[in-house]
Length: 500
Image: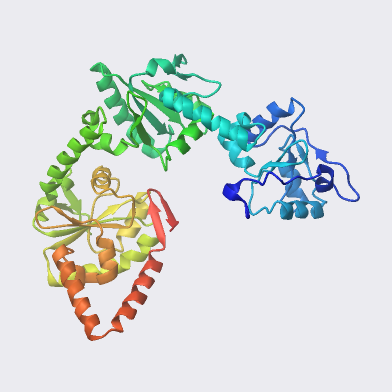
């Protein structure tokens, strides 16, 4: 709130309720008895209003009365009539409302206790009552005490629940998990990435349990539908928080979960060991256990040795999949590409920045091929169907991995492809030259080839010499770079392509 520290309302503010909620020709509020609304707020309202000392007044920001009526019909509380726009405007101005939802809490004397009502109820629910800073401080102190003394209980329990559930519906006391290494599996049963990872986690889980390891997984479900959750969970060998448990959202905030699936590892002492081991398990399976920093340092050394020994065959050959396809659909053996400079182009037709970059890459490709035939480019598609793949690939003059080829997932993982377009350069020995070749093509075009540090140093030296001879070149370069950033004003992350 403007003019206040940390969004906390000044304790000196006090308002006479009748004067701020009524007008000259109205001294009443209106009620609707429907009990549908945001579950969190409805639950808090129903529990507190039953005591007779709590009420909510809806101040609408709807554009017309029809929208107001439709929205208000879902609310069990009071409202300023839509026709009384003067009072609604006055309240907006009085409380400096800059965005919605916005919840101001007044005590029985009309004194503002907080203007962070949305945050209080979202984070603490009915426990935040009477929504004072003192009460929030008290809750936080209680949480810190539990966190110090019983960290696992702090993570998994709620004020009304001290258990997790098994697939057969039994309640398992959280105390039974004490001393074990716990994996908190943030997932949604039908989400594509979770569907892919879950079988791998089941394999790791069952292998470790068979060895007698003190390891447990607790699923933190984000399913929208209880039936789909139940159908999936009954097949799982591990534990879970109950469906739609409020702690799921709390834990997602606490561990700052950006996406799913995520597997957070809690050590035997109840402390966080690893913030996410999904990628590590995909790559190393049971070798990741017991997920300690020492184990991950060991795995990093192993990965480094693997990268140093990387060959084109090691990244592009998987069993019988030892080829890519050409423009005529013919299979091109990977062995034919050994010893060449290779670009791997991760892209998709549905992605606007990919479609914007492809023409530049086509131009660069032809320029490089004209001076070095020992060069090739391979398209790694993230398209959603064969038709889209075929349409997009028809614009390209190079090779491609077949659509929905299983090698794509491995390539995404080893090159840590988080967004598209991505361009990876592989040298003649098969080792990775750079995963940032897209930027080099955007800035330098074919001049960046073969994308090595030595070549980039040559370009920088040439540019420095040019700027020394003509200082105005610096301004031109700045302008050019600014234009490039505009072209890169999108970010594609997984299946979502959004503006930066």
